[in-house]
Image (tube, rainbow, N blue to C red; front, side):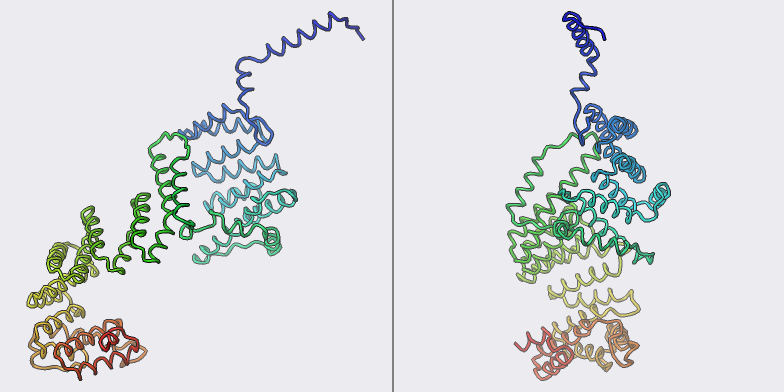
Length: 528
């Protein structure tokens, strides 16, 4: 062995040190300082940033290339596989995403993180494209991906006993939930149901007992309608945190629009529970406040506005209802918005005895009457609204003319229009003719007076409908007619006798109503 003196030793050391510094080129030094750890393995930070930039610019080919380079450099890190899968999912390539995770899992079968990712990718395949699912199954030699996913979780949990890896148990519960959810759709479509082996179900039950409560309370398993906020302060704080959160800059308008929509949905969820609680507590001030929060978050939400309208009607806040419907009408005067505004005017007019509101509502209905291709529901709304307005304005002759005009297009009489006709006779104190009309409907008893009236043939048509057999009981009236509609005839006749001050006949009618409906509110009000 050659002996080294002090001079030779120092010379060799200096040369080695110089070689070390020379070997680190400026680029290599830069890369060395831009490594981040991922499961103990260095990840090229610059390359990762480049891959993300390509992804957010929707340049998926270059993004995939960069992520594959990261996987080649650091095959034991989940970072590259996550990026690859995300790139594939953005292109609706769920099979390729699952294959990427499987590639990583094959190199790190001992890693619970890789097992979790592959299991979730399998669940996504089962719930998504069936062709992609079959192609993946063929490639890996499996037949049931949900069973395979549950085995991945169970094996990972078994290998990591004593480690606090709750996400594995939560993932296992997700597999069972996915199975149950898919089976509901399959049962409806009359397809074969999916099922996990009894032994696997038993293992899931035993393994996840501790974590079940946490899973049930987790947001991913909670329906939006059950989203619960403890208080208004909590909701306000969460909304503020949403606004102040640091987010990356977006490159595309559709991404900006999508982010705004998602933020709106999140804020809307915060206040929906509080909004519904305020409705339940009949607190109009808070109902309006939370409704404004919801509409600000999502201007397309019509459900909350519908609940607010119902709240105003139940609380008889008719002036507020009119104001709201007026705003909606001036924003978009489509058929049902106009009809709703007219109805609100009628409700306020009825509560405050303001005839000019009926005149305004009548004008709106008359405008709708000229709409072409009107449906039967719309027809009843428009003509019924006009008749009610004229009735409230004491324009009885016009009521009868309009009622006959509304009935003319139909071979079968429309009972509500016919009853409005008879009611106008009652209000005009033409009791005899009105009573003849009601008795014709109830007992088919004809008089010369009613037979000579233009409404006669329509009343006969209504009578025919009321007495058609039901199939079960041949003599039972009311074929295709609701009991409430039948009661409308009794109510009209009772009002006639009340106005006529024929108490004996009125009591007879009330007894008949009570016989068919012992808890009838109309009877209780009259007797009260």
